[in-house]
Length: 222
Length: 222
DNA sequence: TAGATTGTTAATCGATTAACAATC
DNA sequence: TAGATTGTTAATCGATTAACAATC
Image 1 (cartoon, each protein chain N blue to C red):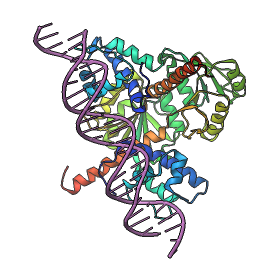
Image 2: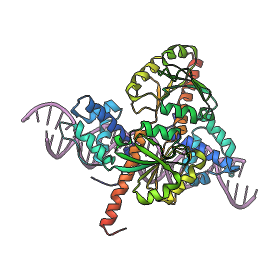
Image 3: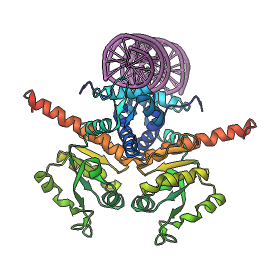
Image 4: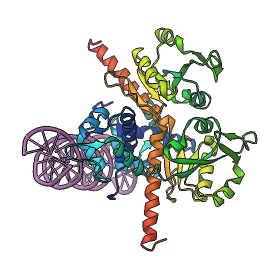
């Protein structure tokens, strides 16, 4: 495996390749060429070969790629077989939605505990994961190896909870709050799920289309 | 406002500018230079000036940008004052989390209705939004102008529900399912909230750090 | 006015695409 | 073998950064 710092763009495409390859495998497809995969996904075949070549040689000249093999290679690159340990911090609506519906194990992640300050939640087990008192977070992290904290607390306490997690040397934060928790002085990995950013980008494109439709009308179009 | 097709990268930065400017305004900051804003956000001042210049001239030489004015300009660019109408399709955990906790109106979006097939949900009003029988979706869309569908149904029906929405000429889909619903033959705008893609990207970076730590140990580091 | 900072043009950097020898 | 398709190098394209005249 080469290692000359793979660009973020490439990394973001890997889960999409994985999803498409899973689908192909599910449909019984055995082999795929970069040209075929590209046409399915809207990429050029060049880009696909370039992307994969960052990590090794997974194909075979004249044949293409074995769907199953390639799928597994990408899963490995994404660390799905490493069983990183995650905890959920905050069991409000979004936290519960994740506990109940998001299959962490399907993605090779162990959700080993959840934490909340709400007395009514503490002690409950949801989907096999126990909810502990947030006050015991310090002890828990001292006694367990935790890689990832899923941050799903209310916005007003998000920064403080994030600071605590960073102080406890969490390795990564999957941030579901709409607060920016970038910490320049720590080397924690932060991955944001900013719902509002996504909605606003969508809204921009809808607005753009509003305008182009007005234009079309103005010049006598549909 | 210039209009030579602004790149997606620029559009994705706009909500982040908005968030930072809101924060500055909240803290009573009146003016900001591109250099200051850049240092806050980890961008170069050049990039910030380039980004804004796609949409107009919002600054003043020798002074910088008025925080409030710039914030409002960006909000306008993002279409926050257009009150686009949205409906929620699927009121499972994630749908309910959105209804209860995500303030659509704060982002200039009107959530006007929700739909589900579950008899137990139909007729209930959550946070001021009524849940209707999914069977009435066709009639509803005929009688109301709807811009955006928030898709939060189970994965196994996602594609079919998406197809129905597209057939009903929905303009945009905010997709919370982990299914790809890209429709090459329609010009619906699709914005994906693929939780698993985000988690896998995070997991890649955590895995990368695993390896660099092993390396460090191997060469006698920490 | 002098200093500061914009908006924009030019230079650089990086990512995508094209081309092709290697080879299955 | 001949045809197909990879992995990689070179060419192109686009995005970021630097530089600077314009001007508040």
